[in-house]
Amino acid sequence: MGSFLSNYRDWLKVADTALPQNIFGYLLQYSLGPFRADPFTILPYDDPKEIARCGSHGAKSFLPEKLPEREGPRPEMIKFMAPNRQVSQLTGDDMHQLLLTAVDEIVAKHSSHVVVRTSVLEKSGEALLIADHITTPHSIAGKTKREIAHVHAGTGSGEYSMHMCLSPMDCKEVISKKWGERMTLAGSFVPHEYLIIYTPRTKEELEVVKSIINAAILFMAGASESVH
Image (tube, rainbow, N blue to C red):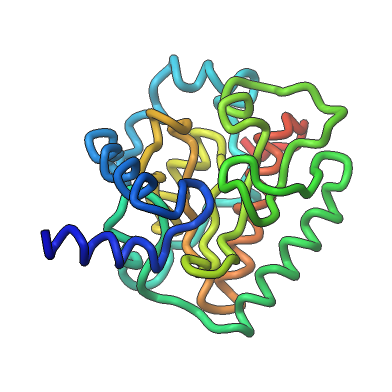
């Protein structure tokens, strides 16, 4: 009983609004344990059926070039099924602000593709969604309710990692080069293409993360730009 109460208290410290912030939310995330995804596998992204779910963009990359390998080990992740966050390699206010400013600049660049609204998946905080005039381009966007990406900038578990969806090819690149991993529920309650992207630690890493956000927008909005 002591261990249960200790884990519950630990969860309350990081719980966000995606689940009820009470014992019912804790038990719900605990019950999702059997669905935990392999965070590092890239096998789904070579599956022809999965590629087909992404429509005409399933076999494309939207990254401007191959990514450099992220330095050092991956960050440690929270032990709970939800929220899905990193608990090491955290950054400070200066880097947080640089990231938020970069996201604002990317949104302005893609104003014809993107609208900023409250996250439909996290139920709080701002998220990038496909602009209203764009028809949902593939089933991946349908499953995320047209949400493209969001930054975890809130209180509690706000450590400035990001969730976003990328094309299968770009998922393989991001995971292989250690810039992110599959969300805990990828392939079950959210698409295989739903990744967590680690918070950038330096200005150089921020440039890479910016290219990943840009790729997510192009893929999810069904834009015509692509590299491969």
